[in-house]
Length: 169
Image (cartoon, rainbow, N blue to C red; front, top):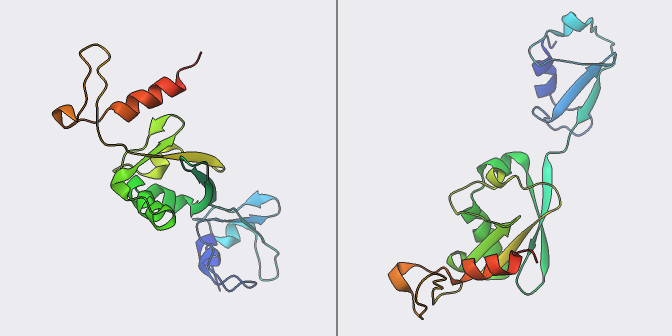
């Protein structure tokens, strides 16, 4: 016999035979049961009815490439907290074929950095992440002499082009 709310949550769910610990809320007589409490604290007895509410932790978002194609992706909240942008780029390579080092991912005008998690960027349900190719080559010097080539190991041409395209009229 279970004594605590957490014991009840960790037992096999009678309908699906699955465990629903983190995403499950238990309700008895209109009150949400706290995990650390004893069932007897709520007056729960052998034949009492407890309602189980399971909240979805899955987030759906979209990847739109530079050719205008859109791909749907799904992850649960825990995966969003641990998935690095570089891991997402690896998944994109499997779908899109573009190597990770040639991908630039942009969400809400922010360039996603490889060593950050997806949750760092607050990607929400139905958000769009834009994939643009990372172009190699020249650098734009708005305040100095222009020129071609990759000066100083930097490649800023796409960053400046993106800023130019997103500047409001």
